[in-house]
Amino acid sequence: GEWNTLVEERDFLHQSFSLIRKEEPKVLPVSSWENEKLIRESTGYSNLDNALGGGLVKGQVILIAGEPGIGKSTLLLQVSDKFAKDKKVLYVSGEESGSQIALRAKRLNIDNSNLLIYPEINLERILKVLEEENPNLLVLDSVQTIFSEKLESSAGSVSQVREVTYRITEYCKERSIPAFIVGQITKEGSIAGPKVLEHIVDTVIQFEGERFNFYRIVKVIKNRFGSTGEIAVFRMTDRGLEEVAEPSAFFISEKAKAPGSVVFPHTEGSKPVLLEVQALVIPALYTTPQRKTQGFDPNRLALILAVLEKEAKIFTRDQDVFVNIAGGMTVKEPAVDLAVAMAVVSSKREKEIPQDTVIFGEVGLSGEIRAVHFGDLRLKEARRFGFRRALIPKNLDVEIEGMEVLPVSHVSEAIELLF
View 1: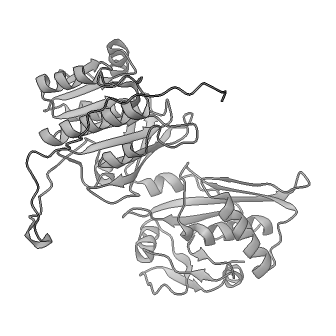
View 2: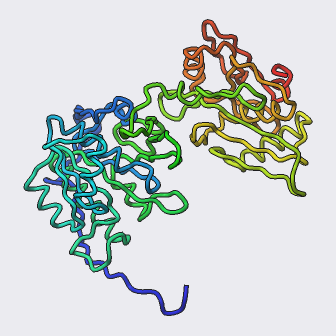
């Protein structure tokens, strides 16, 4: 930055955000309030419906974020087409012209008279067209390109993003119209704009995956109408995005039969997913050994390597260690610790972990294996895909028919059992 380069951003935003309040609220005991029955509508994709908690709720506003070119617009155009079979959809584009969207629709074999395309960036005009067309679903692509005449600032500024999101949400809530809002992301991977953007909407979903790979993962970060952590997996083809019915089968379909590979039953939402954890240990190329990870916290890897050295005499101080969660998934739950530790030991000793074995458990600083949640669900998913053995924390009292459960209390005990 340079001196005298700050410019005041004047905010003429109307003072009151009267979000969906048609009448004054009453003060009543919690038992007196009636539970409103949620009526859900399908997006046309069963895995996306499941990730959202059963489908779209009337008035639900969903923010979808992801890297440029990853397929957000393609997914929403396909969802719009399926939704518009017997309903009206308004697709508002602030990034592409109508002819550009029509060209993409032609590639996807989309020709639907109920799917209305409106290339516009003026919020007041958009609200006017919404009033005239009264659609059953709204798609706004993207919120950072839309501006309101009520503000002097340019599109994409903090005040503009806040104003646009508030007024679109207010409109959709009042008329019970579900809406998808596309959000751009920063170079760090977080959603661009003020944090209030994520607070205003009902649901936040992250669209993940490598641009030059064929898979895409929808992960639910926030959901007022369902659980978080749910995922939906899609495959990018020349016909657009196709849903993957069995994510577990997808992620472990190419599992390597080699040292350093192990299957971990991951659960962040209500449905477990089997993932392959890969580790590679080689002599250090430089004076300072490298610690590289993909889809896993490098700080957590450093902790696990320290525990292995102190408690199990597995030394990697002169070796490079690489850890990868295959398939592009990112795992943050500590239940993956034991799987990572065993993958590292397997690679270092050049001994395969049995192909019919799954591993999970949190590793403590003294080498103890701590219990994690959803142990029974993890094992049932593993058993469903033919796994017969499971290395799990000793404190978990879980038994699954047809599966040999190996409870361990310390990382050294786990190494002794496997190797």
